[in-house]
Image (cartoon, rainbow, N blue to C red):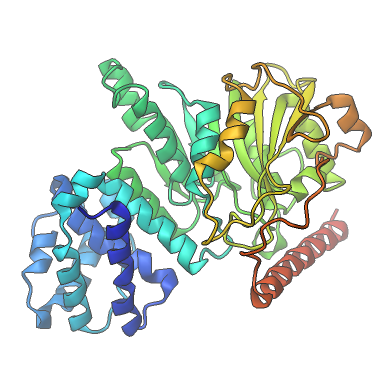
Length: 475
């Protein structure tokens, strides 16, 4: 029986057909998404959401000479005439880069040849699509500044935050919907597929529990398809969280997210009117959105780069505001190399919104999962096992109030009082373990990748300096 990974690899191999037609890796999954949506709609019984005569069977029966013309018309029709709003959004402004009818015929034939019955038996078709998205991220290093969050990290964050039925769960930088899907999977697992909930509670989970925003059109398509395959009908907004869309999102019980890094395009400020601290730095803008958008007692787990922990001036003010309004109880220092951009150093910030605006952070626990860890990559994949010690140390309380042990200077888990952090100028970049030079070096970046990483950092730094210069010129 083929595994999900086997089928994902078969689908990924179809990129060779598209490459022959001039389709880039970056456009590959979007191109394949349209065809897979039609096929999976047939296999899952949801093709009644599609207009008649614009379904997989209609495409499949066309001969090679007429197939490409028909397919172009199908994409236009589904993106303009569909009665289902999700289908309209998935196919909005859809077009194909395929130029040769024989390549489309070969794609349709190869997709149809997959044993879809076995695929359903091995796992859900939604898992298959998620696997394809992950494969695209790991193989192409694509994303134009968007970071694919590894599933072991997502699942570990969800495991400690423990989203519950009836809570509003938000991802303001949704990407392909990985965090929302993981939260939904966690809740369904703990409610026997929602069957333990009352009818009204089930309706809430399906239609209202999740709030997601994604800025990039093609990524939004993937998020919508992922949602449909998982039976999630909550809104997935297309728009900018740092603009009016984010300003009008309902407050959340839980936020799980990995916001984009860097500065706002063009070095400009966000168009939000409700931010106390104005900055072009995206991660600080998202951080403000998150802790301001939590309900009292709401909790968040947020991936942030190292500079959020130590940047001075506005950065220090935002951290102080965060620690006033929230209990920033845990920081997880992540290993390097787990995102596609080599050398990017990241952390997960766990915090709980207080009922007032002052004095909520008393102790900050820091878990160092970075020092003396392998350089993760293809030859050393990141797994849930790597996060188990952290999950155990975090404890069973999602608010970080469970029993914890300071492991001292030789351990990975340590505790620091608020006063200590204040004396450091609100600097949260705390480390104490010495990195062993013998750490596994097998996945170090090539010189070409290392140079590209340095150039990217320099461009970000220049953009930030230019934004600062602009702010000073127009106070």
